Length: 96
Image (cartoon, rainbow, N blue to C red):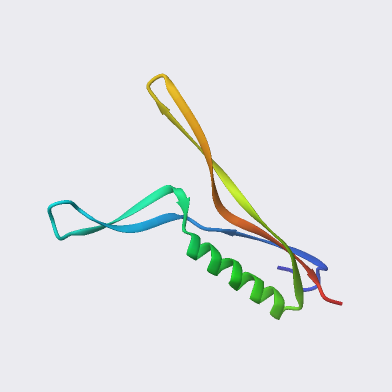
């Protein structure tokens, strides 16, 4: 980020949600990543960190817009698609 710019943008990208699941009939836990969901807490923390950093550098956040990625699945003769939030685009203006 250029400290002399009047407007700046940051792109925050977060990966898929991961949860711990127990393997049936065992005591073993495994991590399951679900690409249909974003890691919401990680995204919220990353946005807060970025906004606090921009504020410390003398910027006011003017917008936070979610970014999406597309997914498509094909099964036999049918197919479907959906979009998943994968991050955010933050725009800020320097305070004069």
